[in-house]
Length: 311
Image 1 (cartoon, helix red, strand yellow):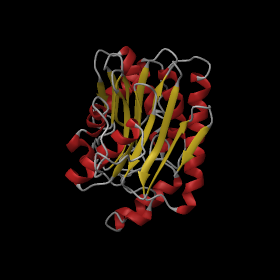
Image 2: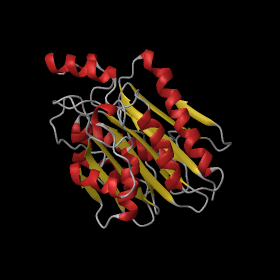
Image 3: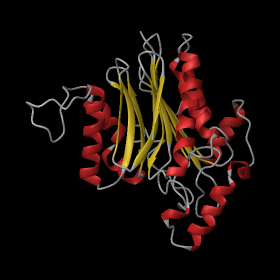
Image 4: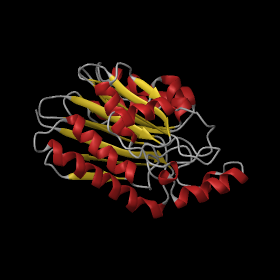
Protein backbone atom coordinates (compact mmCIF):
# COMPACT_ATOMS: atom_id res chain seq x y z
CA UNK A 1 0.00 0.00 0.00
CA UNK A 2 1.17 3.55 -0.69
CA UNK A 3 1.96 5.28 2.62
CA UNK A 4 0.19 8.49 3.68
CA UNK A 5 0.82 11.18 6.28
CA UNK A 6 -1.02 14.28 7.48
CA UNK A 7 -0.18 16.59 10.41
CA UNK A 8 -1.61 19.66 12.13
CA UNK A 9 -0.40 22.39 14.46
CA UNK A 10 -3.72 23.62 15.79
CA UNK A 11 -6.81 25.55 14.67
CA UNK A 12 -6.97 29.08 16.07
CA UNK A 13 -6.68 32.74 15.15
CA UNK A 14 -3.12 32.40 13.95
CA UNK A 15 -1.70 35.92 13.49
CA UNK A 16 0.07 36.88 10.28
CA UNK A 17 3.44 37.03 11.99
CA UNK A 18 3.15 33.37 13.08
CA UNK A 19 2.06 31.92 9.71
CA UNK A 20 5.56 31.19 8.37
CA UNK A 21 6.66 29.57 11.64
CA UNK A 22 3.56 27.36 11.71
CA UNK A 23 4.02 26.28 8.09
CA UNK A 24 7.71 25.60 8.70
CA UNK A 25 6.91 23.49 11.75
CA UNK A 26 4.38 21.41 9.83
CA UNK A 27 6.86 20.98 6.97
CA UNK A 28 9.56 19.72 9.33
CA UNK A 29 7.08 17.36 10.98
CA UNK A 30 6.15 15.94 7.57
CA UNK A 31 9.82 15.52 6.71
CA UNK A 32 10.47 13.61 9.94
CA UNK A 33 7.52 11.28 9.46
CA UNK A 34 7.92 10.82 5.72
CA UNK A 35 11.61 9.93 6.03
CA UNK A 36 10.38 6.85 7.91
CA UNK A 37 7.31 5.99 5.82
CA UNK A 38 9.05 6.45 2.45
CA UNK A 39 11.68 3.85 3.44
CA UNK A 40 9.03 1.31 4.39
CA UNK A 41 8.98 2.16 8.09
CA UNK A 42 6.01 1.91 10.41
CA UNK A 43 3.18 4.38 10.79
CA UNK A 44 3.70 4.31 14.55
CA UNK A 45 7.33 5.40 14.21
CA UNK A 46 6.27 8.07 11.71
CA UNK A 47 3.60 9.74 13.83
CA UNK A 48 5.85 9.67 16.88
CA UNK A 49 8.65 11.38 14.93
CA UNK A 50 6.29 13.94 13.39
CA UNK A 51 4.60 14.86 16.66
CA UNK A 52 7.93 15.12 18.49
CA UNK A 53 9.01 17.80 16.01
CA UNK A 54 5.83 19.74 16.77
CA UNK A 55 6.22 19.24 20.54
CA UNK A 56 9.76 20.65 20.40
CA UNK A 57 8.64 23.77 18.51
CA UNK A 58 7.47 26.55 20.87
CA UNK A 59 5.16 28.03 18.23
CA UNK A 60 2.77 25.15 19.02
CA UNK A 61 0.92 24.33 22.25
CA UNK A 62 2.48 20.95 23.05
CA UNK A 63 5.62 19.88 24.88
CA UNK A 64 8.07 22.77 25.15
CA UNK A 65 6.18 26.05 24.87
CA UNK A 66 2.86 24.71 26.15
CA UNK A 67 0.37 27.07 27.75
CA UNK A 68 0.74 27.44 31.52
CA UNK A 69 -1.99 26.52 33.98
CA UNK A 70 -3.33 28.85 36.66
CA UNK A 71 -0.38 28.04 38.92
CA UNK A 72 2.14 28.83 36.17
CA UNK A 73 3.06 25.22 35.35
CA UNK A 74 2.96 23.19 32.14
CA UNK A 75 0.63 20.17 32.18
CA UNK A 76 0.73 18.13 28.97
CA UNK A 77 -1.55 15.44 27.54
CA UNK A 78 -1.04 13.02 24.64
CA UNK A 79 -2.50 9.94 22.98
CA UNK A 80 -1.49 7.38 20.35
CA UNK A 81 -4.03 4.95 18.84
CA UNK A 82 -3.65 1.78 16.78
CA UNK A 83 -6.33 1.44 14.10
CA UNK A 84 -5.93 -2.33 13.80
CA UNK A 85 -6.47 -3.22 17.46
CA UNK A 86 -8.41 -0.13 18.59
CA UNK A 87 -5.98 0.07 21.48
CA UNK A 88 -4.71 3.43 22.67
CA UNK A 89 -2.01 4.71 24.96
CA UNK A 90 -2.67 8.04 26.66
CA UNK A 91 -1.07 10.22 29.31
CA UNK A 92 -2.37 13.36 31.01
CA UNK A 93 -1.24 16.21 33.30
CA UNK A 94 2.46 15.58 32.65
CA UNK A 95 4.86 18.15 34.10
CA UNK A 96 8.23 16.48 33.56
CA UNK A 97 8.03 14.75 30.16
CA UNK A 98 9.58 16.69 27.27
CA UNK A 99 7.84 14.64 24.55
CA UNK A 100 4.48 13.38 25.83
CA UNK A 101 3.86 11.40 22.63
CA UNK A 102 6.79 9.15 23.54
CA UNK A 103 5.14 8.26 26.83
CA UNK A 104 1.78 7.70 25.11
CA UNK A 105 3.50 5.20 22.83
CA UNK A 106 5.11 3.42 25.77
CA UNK A 107 1.72 3.10 27.44
CA UNK A 108 0.26 1.76 24.18
CA UNK A 109 2.96 -0.86 23.89
CA UNK A 110 3.92 -1.76 27.46
CA UNK A 111 1.05 -1.01 29.83
CA UNK A 112 -2.03 -3.12 30.61
CA UNK A 113 -3.90 0.19 30.93
CA UNK A 114 -4.79 2.70 28.22
CA UNK A 115 -4.33 5.92 30.22
CA UNK A 116 -2.02 7.03 33.01
CA UNK A 117 -1.95 10.47 34.62
CA UNK A 118 0.25 12.77 36.69
CA UNK A 119 2.85 11.24 39.02
CA UNK A 120 1.88 7.68 38.11
CA UNK A 121 2.39 8.37 34.42
CA UNK A 122 5.76 10.00 35.06
CA UNK A 123 6.84 7.05 37.22
CA UNK A 124 5.90 4.70 34.37
CA UNK A 125 7.90 6.89 31.97
CA UNK A 126 11.02 6.68 34.13
CA UNK A 127 10.63 2.92 34.55
CA UNK A 128 10.49 2.54 30.76
CA UNK A 129 13.53 4.56 29.86
CA UNK A 130 12.07 8.02 29.31
CA UNK A 131 14.22 10.59 31.05
CA UNK A 132 12.26 13.13 33.06
CA UNK A 133 13.06 16.84 32.71
CA UNK A 134 12.66 19.68 35.15
CA UNK A 135 9.21 21.34 34.90
CA UNK A 136 10.76 24.70 34.10
CA UNK A 137 12.47 23.21 31.02
CA UNK A 138 9.05 23.08 29.31
CA UNK A 139 8.28 26.76 29.92
CA UNK A 140 9.05 29.23 27.12
CA UNK A 141 9.62 32.93 27.75
CA UNK A 142 6.66 33.79 25.51
CA UNK A 143 4.25 31.61 27.49
CA UNK A 144 5.55 32.87 30.83
CA UNK A 145 4.87 36.42 29.67
CA UNK A 146 1.45 35.44 28.33
CA UNK A 147 0.57 33.76 31.63
CA UNK A 148 1.52 36.86 33.61
CA UNK A 149 -0.75 39.02 31.46
CA UNK A 150 -3.65 36.55 31.36
CA UNK A 151 -3.56 35.99 35.09
CA UNK A 152 -3.92 39.69 35.75
CA UNK A 153 -6.36 40.49 32.96
CA UNK A 154 -9.12 37.88 32.93
CA UNK A 155 -7.37 35.62 30.42
CA UNK A 156 -7.56 38.04 27.48
CA UNK A 157 -7.01 36.14 24.24
CA UNK A 158 -4.77 38.73 22.63
CA UNK A 159 -2.09 38.18 25.23
CA UNK A 160 -0.83 34.93 23.84
CA UNK A 161 -0.79 32.60 20.89
CA UNK A 162 -3.76 30.38 20.40
CA UNK A 163 -5.96 31.11 23.41
CA UNK A 164 -7.58 27.66 23.75
CA UNK A 165 -6.06 26.10 20.63
CA UNK A 166 -2.63 25.09 19.34
CA UNK A 167 -2.82 21.33 19.85
CA UNK A 168 -0.75 19.18 17.46
CA UNK A 169 -1.39 15.81 15.84
CA UNK A 170 -0.61 13.35 13.07
CA UNK A 171 -2.22 10.43 11.22
CA UNK A 172 -0.28 7.93 9.10
CA UNK A 173 -0.68 4.75 7.08
CA UNK A 174 2.38 2.69 6.17
CA UNK A 175 3.18 0.30 3.32
CA UNK A 176 1.63 -2.57 5.28
CA UNK A 177 -1.65 -0.69 5.67
CA UNK A 178 -1.19 -0.08 9.40
CA UNK A 179 -3.01 3.05 10.58
CA UNK A 180 -2.04 5.13 13.62
CA UNK A 181 -3.16 8.51 14.91
CA UNK A 182 -1.74 10.78 17.62
CA UNK A 183 -2.60 14.03 19.38
CA UNK A 184 -0.55 16.07 21.87
CA UNK A 185 -1.34 19.30 23.73
CA UNK A 186 -0.45 21.65 26.54
CA UNK A 187 -4.10 22.52 27.06
CA UNK A 188 -5.48 25.98 27.70
CA UNK A 189 -3.77 28.98 29.23
CA UNK A 190 -4.59 29.53 32.91
CA UNK A 191 -6.54 26.28 33.08
CA UNK A 192 -7.24 24.87 36.51
CA UNK A 193 -4.48 22.51 37.68
CA UNK A 194 -5.49 18.95 36.82
CA UNK A 195 -7.73 19.95 33.92
CA UNK A 196 -7.77 17.39 31.11
CA UNK A 197 -9.29 18.31 27.76
CA UNK A 198 -10.26 16.26 24.74
CA UNK A 199 -6.79 15.53 23.37
CA UNK A 200 -5.83 12.38 25.34
CA UNK A 201 -9.37 10.98 25.45
CA UNK A 202 -10.03 8.13 23.04
CA UNK A 203 -12.71 9.14 20.55
CA UNK A 204 -12.58 12.82 21.49
CA UNK A 205 -9.24 14.29 20.45
CA UNK A 206 -8.06 11.23 18.56
CA UNK A 207 -9.41 8.01 17.05
CA UNK A 208 -8.22 5.38 14.58
CA UNK A 209 -10.00 2.39 13.06
CA UNK A 210 -8.36 0.60 10.15
CA UNK A 211 -11.79 -0.23 8.75
CA UNK A 212 -12.63 3.46 8.30
CA UNK A 213 -9.85 5.96 9.03
CA UNK A 214 -7.97 7.99 11.62
CA UNK A 215 -8.51 11.48 13.04
CA UNK A 216 -6.71 14.04 15.20
CA UNK A 217 -8.66 17.04 16.51
CA UNK A 218 -7.84 20.52 17.78
CA UNK A 219 -9.90 23.28 19.34
CA UNK A 220 -12.05 23.92 22.37
CA UNK A 221 -11.68 20.68 24.32
CA UNK A 222 -14.81 20.80 26.44
CA UNK A 223 -16.92 21.19 23.29
CA UNK A 224 -15.04 18.47 21.39
CA UNK A 225 -15.77 16.07 24.25
CA UNK A 226 -19.50 16.79 24.01
CA UNK A 227 -19.77 15.30 20.52
CA UNK A 228 -16.89 12.78 20.77
CA UNK A 229 -15.58 14.50 17.65
CA UNK A 230 -12.83 12.15 16.49
CA UNK A 231 -15.01 9.02 16.74
CA UNK A 232 -17.96 10.83 15.18
CA UNK A 233 -15.77 11.81 12.24
CA UNK A 234 -14.46 8.28 11.74
CA UNK A 235 -18.02 6.98 11.76
CA UNK A 236 -18.85 9.39 8.92
CA UNK A 237 -16.17 7.63 6.86
CA UNK A 238 -18.11 4.37 7.11
CA UNK A 239 -21.09 5.60 5.10
CA UNK A 240 -21.65 7.24 1.71
CA UNK A 241 -20.33 10.78 1.32
CA UNK A 242 -22.78 13.63 1.80
CA UNK A 243 -22.37 17.33 1.05
CA UNK A 244 -23.39 19.52 3.96
CA UNK A 245 -26.00 22.12 2.94
CA UNK A 246 -25.68 21.12 -0.74
CA UNK A 247 -28.55 19.61 -2.80
CA UNK A 248 -27.89 15.94 -3.64
CA UNK A 249 -27.95 16.70 -7.37
CA UNK A 250 -25.06 19.16 -7.12
CA UNK A 251 -21.45 18.02 -6.75
CA UNK A 252 -19.49 19.89 -4.09
CA UNK A 253 -16.18 18.86 -5.65
CA UNK A 254 -14.61 17.20 -2.62
CA UNK A 255 -13.26 13.76 -1.76
CA UNK A 256 -15.01 11.44 0.68
CA UNK A 257 -12.31 12.24 3.23
CA UNK A 258 -12.82 16.00 2.88
CA UNK A 259 -16.59 15.63 2.99
CA UNK A 260 -16.43 13.63 6.22
CA UNK A 261 -14.19 16.28 7.75
CA UNK A 262 -16.51 19.10 6.66
CA UNK A 263 -19.63 17.39 7.91
CA UNK A 264 -18.04 16.60 11.26
CA UNK A 265 -17.02 20.23 11.83
CA UNK A 266 -20.46 21.38 10.64
CA UNK A 267 -22.17 19.14 13.20
CA UNK A 268 -19.66 20.12 15.89
CA UNK A 269 -20.33 23.82 15.37
CA UNK A 270 -24.09 23.33 15.15
CA UNK A 271 -24.35 21.35 18.39
CA UNK A 272 -21.73 23.13 20.51
CA UNK A 273 -21.37 26.60 18.94
CA UNK A 274 -17.63 26.22 19.48
CA UNK A 275 -14.55 26.34 17.29
CA UNK A 276 -12.03 23.74 16.26
CA UNK A 277 -10.61 21.67 13.45
CA UNK A 278 -9.43 18.21 12.50
CA UNK A 279 -7.26 16.23 10.11
CA UNK A 280 -7.89 12.70 8.89
CA UNK A 281 -6.86 9.90 6.60
CA UNK A 282 -9.49 7.50 5.34
CA UNK A 283 -8.64 3.79 5.18
CA UNK A 284 -7.27 4.22 1.66
CA UNK A 285 -4.90 6.97 2.76
CA UNK A 286 -6.81 9.92 1.31
CA UNK A 287 -6.30 13.08 3.40
CA UNK A 288 -9.06 15.35 4.64
CA UNK A 289 -9.25 18.39 6.89
CA UNK A 290 -11.72 21.03 8.05
CA UNK A 291 -11.91 23.85 10.58
CA UNK A 292 -14.23 26.71 11.56
CA UNK A 293 -11.54 28.94 13.05
CA UNK A 294 -9.82 31.76 11.17
CA UNK A 295 -6.90 29.47 10.36
CA UNK A 296 -5.48 26.01 10.99
CA UNK A 297 -1.87 24.94 10.52
CA UNK A 298 -1.68 21.64 8.63
CA UNK A 299 0.25 19.72 6.02
CA UNK A 300 0.14 16.43 4.16
CA UNK A 301 2.15 14.43 1.67
CA UNK A 302 0.74 14.65 -1.86
CA UNK A 303 0.54 11.57 -4.15
CA UNK A 304 3.76 12.65 -5.89
CA UNK A 305 5.61 12.77 -2.57
CA UNK A 306 5.70 16.56 -2.28
CA UNK A 307 4.79 18.31 0.97
CA UNK A 308 1.74 20.58 0.98
CA UNK A 309 1.47 22.90 3.97
CA UNK A 310 -0.98 25.69 4.71
CA UNK A 311 -2.21 28.01 7.43
